[in-house]
Length: 153
Image 1 (cartoon, helix red, strand yellow):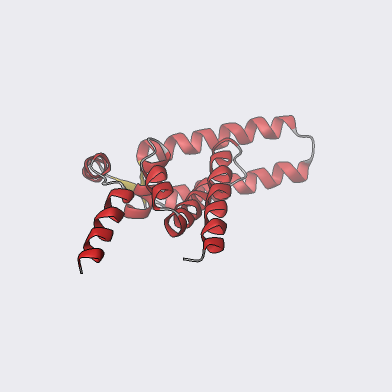
Image 2 (image 1 turned 120 degrees about the vertical axis):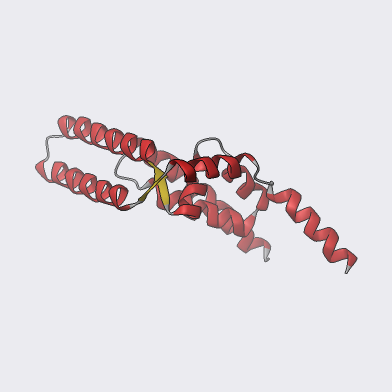
């Protein structure tokens, strides 16, 4: 890959990761799309950064379950909705503009609908995810094995 393209993907992934993490705190920023973009950019630019992201204790499991199952556990769904509306209510109380309050309510409704429409993982899927997640082979190790195979051919 072109080195400039690689660094653009790496910078884009890092920016997306930062925005995704910020979205956990600020309910107006969507967390999931930014984390998915970050994983895509890291996959294109740096296998080690992708492996680092996917192997993160909290975000990695979240990204992996979303990509693999298009679903989230019920506990995550409920806690996300509670956290979302708590921060929106607090933000609404601190703001005096009716337009911004209405915007926050619209964002809250949209995000809540999105979360409710996501498939809820059952206990079997959660156990399977935990088993798979504990046994993920890091990408750099896979890359080295592929290089050995290519050199041998």
